[in-house]
View (cartoon, rainbow, N blue to C red):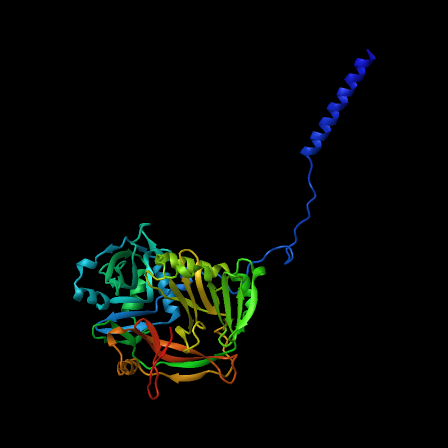
Length: 447
């Protein structure tokens, strides 16, 4: 009997111990230390500048209004931004391909007809890219590109026709918009032209109709002391494992390599060139242009690489090359010959990954020129500039565009100082050239 009591007592004790352990497990709260927000405990992203969206990088190169055989235009960044934001509030009806319905005369009249507003782009823009900025009533858009948009006034106050045009490929897609805000747009561009400048039109034989500002612009040469970005920052941004990267020197440049990729820093120009050597056999691979634009922006965003004011500038369907150019006071900035890469971010892609990336290693801070360095320069009028271009020994049919820009040079006396000098430029055979004045001579190739 005593033995049975002992077993019962032991069993009850085991049950109580089991319940105690179960209760402890259910109510156990481990004491974890709070991770402090410090550079020692958190891996930070590389921050060169900032990230940007396509809407901040894609703008027309100019706007031209055609009114009663007169032309008025602007390249003012404020106007271009207003125009793009205004269009973003419209609904575009599904574009219809009407290319085959237009003969050559009708095609030309579409571009320059009375009460037409024409937007020019410096490169080809895919529909699949612009739909990220503009709203279409249908999710499917044409698998095509355009380099101009033409807005044609209609009788109804809240309606207009919009044409997406590729001049080079002679493609025209017609759309329609209805918006209550069209009244303000029409008042701004089709009635009042005080804020627009007179433009002249020049027909290139067997070529396009060039529109350039009529009056001689007065701009300023401006000088800057740029802020240098450490090469180590780019090393951390561009290499998968910076700890494997070795540094060396070659012909006035620092070189960084991990065996499969190479980054070169040019001391005289401050240009960074990154090459993924493993992808050399993929150069020339075709990529859809909208995919190339998306990948190029994402690549720079991944290392917060946007600085100053850059815009999408050079795009060609079927090409793996793309570039974003620096702008100052509404005008593109080009390089002095032999200094390529100081005023643009350019990329060349393989099938899926980037092969070459070229960019400046400095921030100019365009709103902070050196004090007392502004020198006013009056350029030639548009008509004089065109005459000087045509007086050269060139094939005029290869002349496709013309505009004012800045040339970036390094001060010889002070190599750390950059000077940006205004000048006329023209696009010849796909390359932007500086119009040399004061005695003439050959033009400098800039791209």
